[in-house]
Length: 478
Image (cartoon, rainbow, N blue to C red; front, side):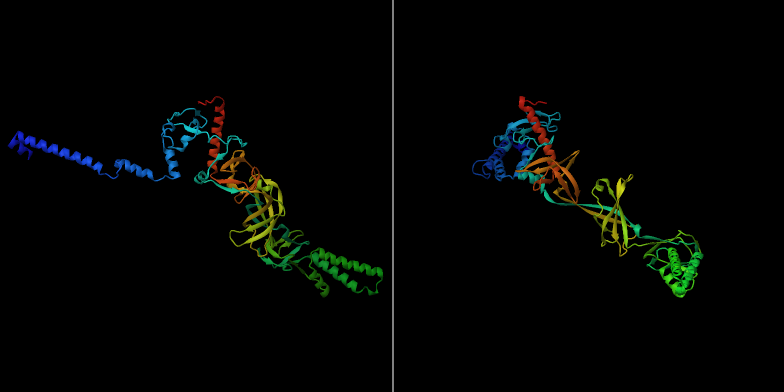
């Protein structure tokens, strides 16, 4: 269309196009200015200014304001008065953000381009006279305590019981082990107990033995017994001699371990028995067997071993730092992994006088009743000793910070002031630890976020040290 206008009308067509373009430009500018006048707000402010006013109208929370201050990189001297609460605080000097020991009286940057951090007068107050080198008290308000997660607990005066848990091994009670032997030579004619593990009771027949010595002893006893029956016509001297012979013959049989029942039967029947039966001296289990039927035996030869398991020993090893707290007569409690319901009470009966050089442990022996035969020799069991250490000040073990040779706790004295103190601790058990010195009953100690307090305490000590150095000449340039 513009081409047709130029061809048809010439110069007049060009003027028409120029007029249309000018008209369009005027209309556009008019609409632009009218839009600003019709925007919301009657005070004449722009829409952008009004939007800013709406944003700042809502009050900010303390957490939002603290975050905004933290990320605000505007230098302190360029901030408007009243825009930041820290602007009203007095700045003593500026410290290196990476090394608090390096300071400057004026704003500066370190070698990495980081701004020095201002140190205010109130931050350097409080002193570091805690008696602990390199540490200073930490001041925190209620909000700071909540945000940092610091939790305190009171130190209490109570009876402290230390529990020691270890693993023990069940052993037979050596005082209840009996060995069956013979005091004469002979031959085993019949073996009534012919395998290990059999349960026997006291008086149970074990084996029968033929011994020429026992046969000769029976004959002597019967001869003395017959003479004793015919001594009515004898004189006093002869009667005394016959009684002496009878007593000697009976004593000889008893010294050969001939059962009393056998001697009474011999006296009643007046007949020599070829075999003599040996009986079990105690009740228990046959744990050793060294004899067979038809075997020749000699005096002192070990034939059978019978063990009474109604009471057993448990031996356990304790570390060196626990050894000094164990005493004979202390109560012990036994548990078993294979029987969770089993719990037996016993006592420490013996502590070995030497240390195992390989494991560096001390062995102690405990005795437990085993009437139900729940415990078998060779079993492993859990043993717990509860040691009463008397009344003492106790705090949670998480409150103690171990730093080389020192043990530090932070005590909340008053007004949010956490004071580092060096303490001497005693025994520890079940999440608690004795305090021998440094903390009194009733004081509150920090049990959580201790490392934050430790870092802040060391930082405050460095800052206060830098302030003291700056006091004489007022200049602490690095």
